[in-house]
Length: 629
Image (tube, rainbow, N blue to C red; front, side):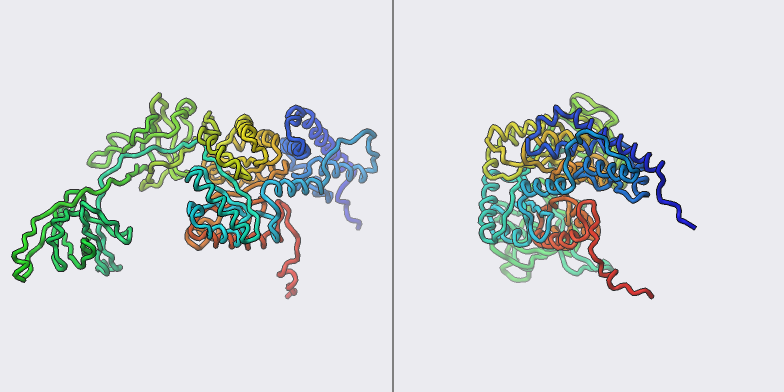
């Protein structure tokens, strides 16, 4: 019995009609975009045309066509990003040959071939991120810590570990510190023989929580206990002269300021008694003296504040000590400490236009709210743009709410997302408005001032909060004014609007010769929802590959390793997926050098398995060693 063919002429005819319609739409999309293409830098025109073709391709529902093409053994168009029209045209030509159809006469529209599309991405990546760091293709970017300005050895270690680019965050430190970082980097390049690009990340507009009223500090003395509650080590503190405070050798040691004349009457071996803030009697044993201060120990948990009265518990038996007069004395002024606002689901919070220090809610004896908490916002301009029922998020998505009321001087927010026991909101934490169309300028006066200082040192400028093509043109104009058009622009995609406008942002950025994109996954997750992050980062990778624009995979890569020296399994998998980008960025941390080394090894291993969306079919050890049992 003869096998049924995988296709019939009618199936092939249907596929050919669909492909020809698709090809015609791609060509028409380029004609419609002719005006935008004219504004693109001449070196970017082939890439801009391919981007237009890709966006036109993805306007279609192609899953049925893909299944049909796969069933007859043809390309399903799934890896066409870098050479869209070439892929569609090639599939059309094969279908015509299978049907023995003659190509229609006429001039074909010029397009990138397969090799040219891939080569352009590699070429643009080298222009933006530097030469390929043998033996891997994906670059590693490291955010420099403040110490890089004063400790040159940090740069040597980072470069030797495999760093190819460094990021300087202009939201922190000063121009003087940034300049020293670059000088130390150039010395490290000479010492290690490695080249390294420098990205200055502009701070952009800051939408953050304002200050909160400070509160009087309370000193807590807490002894260590075993599982049975028995004291294994008393709490230690230092009594220091209130008039001349001396910092403790260990910041964890509590400092209790007392009058200097009173301290002169204290002796090692004395016991000091006081009523703590809960009116519980507690004892301090004086166990040592050092430079006018006394070490004391407490075997029970105690709380002290400014004004707590401390007295000598008793007199020693020696004649000299019997004659010693030690009157009670008060704890000196303790520094004020930062406080937070604890928010639970259902709570109200007032966001004020004024930066007058906020305050926690006022509650009754049963814990019920008499007055909601209040905190300011550093960007009062947003009050004109936000609307009721829109979402608001705080502190990288830890706390979420809905805007209930918009008034001239304040917003009323109902908290919807927080832990049941409450989440702490501190001053200077980020605020996101994912549903709102904010009209904040992406380039602030501070950014413009910073540009003047960093332009001579920068290879790249990271553009925070970019949302519209006009934003891109504003930065291009400033770089042109500073005669720094050689500096590449890296668009940070961190808001919902930036994601939705990505094709237009790319076309605007391609009016400059060197362009890159950073996926700022932390803010993007808050703006669009964590459940959508994986989908969005894939779409950004696809669109940028179509534009032959290199992508930087950023935010919390190997964060636990950089911070604590041990990565989680999820972080290692996430870092491995970064191989689909052209660069992976690491944040600073005590173990940053170790994180760079680990990322270097992960990327080398993964590059033999994965190239963008394409699985690399290298021989597998498990296949070579397979013996049927």
